[in-house]
Structures are given as structure tokens and as C-alpha cells.
Length: 153
Image 1 (cartoon, one colour):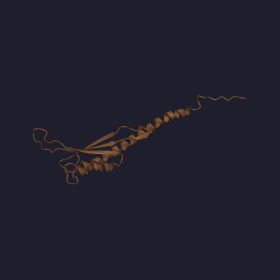
Image 2 (spheres, helix red, strand yellow; image 1 turned 90 degrees about the vertical axis):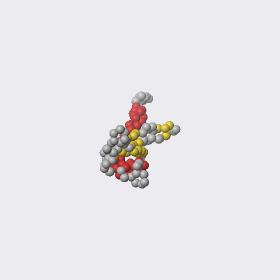
Image 3 (cartoon, one colour; image 1 turned 45 degrees about the horizontal axis):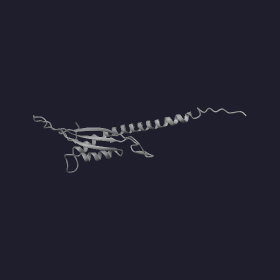
Image 4 (cartoon, one colour; image 1 turned 120 degrees about the horizontal axis):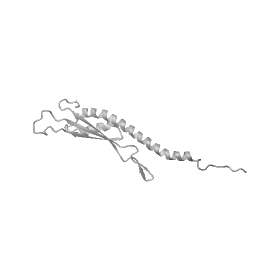
């Protein structure tokens, strides 16, 4: 009888290499997906935020004409869609800061902030929490001209 020889060390080499490389490729794919999604959301946010601030910040709807941050935030989060959180705050300029009288009015600006949590942000397998614990933030400030309503400075 003839004995067959088996090479024990080389039969499963490709399986071991695949088991080592696949998790790395999956993590790289998730990172690239989240970077592309965040880039697309930033582009949309930068395009939409000044238009919404112009439409609702200069002539707000309702009785409270001094601060339209809530209305701007609701319209901006509706325009951005799901997956992001939007915060808006009014930053009023101080025209009475110096001793001399100021002839130019204070410039008001709305600071819009978008918060994106990468996917998967809360993923649990067998009691182990897997996911990105960070959040990506993008801010856009839109100053309004006090002399020309509807104009961005």
C-alpha cells in the first residue's frame, strides 16, 4: 500500500487569511460609508441652511419676532431628513459695546449646528456594544444684514 502525503500546514492558509482580512475590510467599508454620508449631509446643510434662515429669520411667523430659532430648527431638521440633529441659536451683535455711539446697526446671525452619529451607532451582539461612540458636528453661521431685509451679509 502506498501512503499518501498530506501537507498539514498549507491546506487552510486561504481560510485563515480571509478570517483575518474580512473584519478589517468590513470596518473600512463602514468608515468610508459614514464619511461619504457625512460629506453629502454637510453639502446639503450648507446649501439649505442660509435659505431657511433667510426665509424664517428675517420675517418669522408667529408673535415672537425677536427669536425664530425654534422655527428655523424645525424647518431645517425637516429639510435634512432623518439621521441628523439640528440646533439653532441666535447670536445678536452688540452695538453699544464702546463709548462712542455706533451708527451702523448690530448684525444678528443665526448659528446652525448639525450633529451626525455614524452608523451603526448602537449595535449590540451578545451583550457587547459595538458601534461608534463619537458624533460628527458641522456648524454654519449665517449673518443677516440689519438694513436690507432678506439679505445675507
